[in-house]
Image (cartoon, rainbow, N blue to C red; front, side):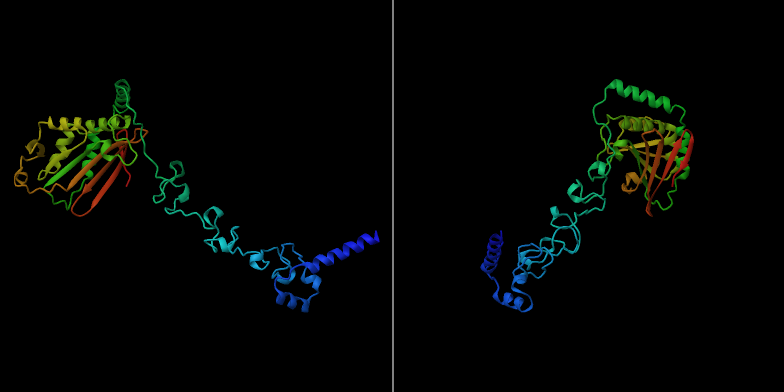
Length: 320
């Protein structure tokens, strides 16, 4: 047994002495302070010998003199490989945080609309007010029409018109003509909304427009501005045809378009002195619960303003 340990001891010395000294100057310097055994040891087991190891008690890399590579932001990506060494980020993005350009909380890499704020449900894109766009049968639309008319049969559109018209103030509106945009839903549809005439939403809105713009209400609107020429515009052809059938107000056709005036005064129209860019819009539309909202936009020479009404039954509330 004694012979075995003696042999093992000399074997260790043989291998220690047989190790190649990579840096003789560093080894010589180390031996001035420590023993040869210590200088050739590797206490932290990182494969870098003591005389070459600048961090002998920490596991490191030979390329970094036996010291661990720094990771300033502690994100697990060492600084030499980190494109953003002072800001924590995942290895998949080279140590940088994933960007969120539009600030909606959805990272650009997961954001289908990275420059426009959106919601998770739409993969980072804005919420879509999307309505079914499949073709509805005549029977389906007739049933929707029947239910809508039944639900709103006691709704007083004349009272609503009086309420709105009393709110209108065109002080500063200098144009000789008012382009009255009688909105159907397709005019107001935004991105992602159904612009066809085959949706229940469009049907209800068009019905509301037709009921609101009866002869009494349209005549009252024209008479409210006796010095103005009124040009009603609607994408709802039923409303256009209905207005053209009214007989109690003066009308005149010019270049295929019908204009209206309370005093039969179309002098400005004949002289082409009207300003077609001044307009007045009344939008009537329905939320999903069939509560009627009326939005009135007034584009005057002074400013553009609007008010929003909520109507329940025959009670009207101005929301702004």
